[in-house]
Amino acid sequence: MLLILMRHAEAGKASLRRYPDDDLRPLNSTGKKTQRAMAKALKRMRIKPDRILTSPRLRARHTAGITARILGLANTVSEDEALGGRYSLKTALTLLTRCKPDETVLCVGHEPDLSELAQALLGADFPIKFGKSAVMGIAFNRRAARGAGTLLYFYRPQDLLRLV
Image (cartoon, rainbow, N blue to C red):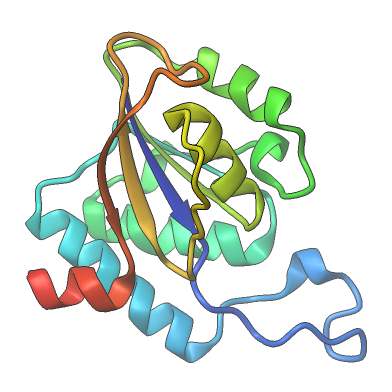
């Protein structure tokens, strides 16, 4: 299995007045632009998931949607509360065990959850931090499991966009 973890792109600033429900906070124009560039870079690198799982929060759904359109995967996006933020590591690991061993899956989510998930999957004893629109590839011999992953890449937008 190949797992691609991606943090949502830059969103509007959290504000109870403007966004009383934080789950409905959308991407801002910078976030949309950056995510389009990131998706195009992934396409140039021939990174194409079989399907995309996303948090149901609006900013993650928008990030997944932009990525799916550019990669030609518009009908492969599905929401899962396990990626919605404030989830347990066990819940996320359970979600990944439902993925096929020969599948490439892109998961779009939030911090600090993605960092905790990546650390667990890699068996890392060092901190990992996902910036906005950052993307990480992790390979598994069969299925995703705690400590069984091999890091393939970890790109921040400013790094990936310089490479391609």
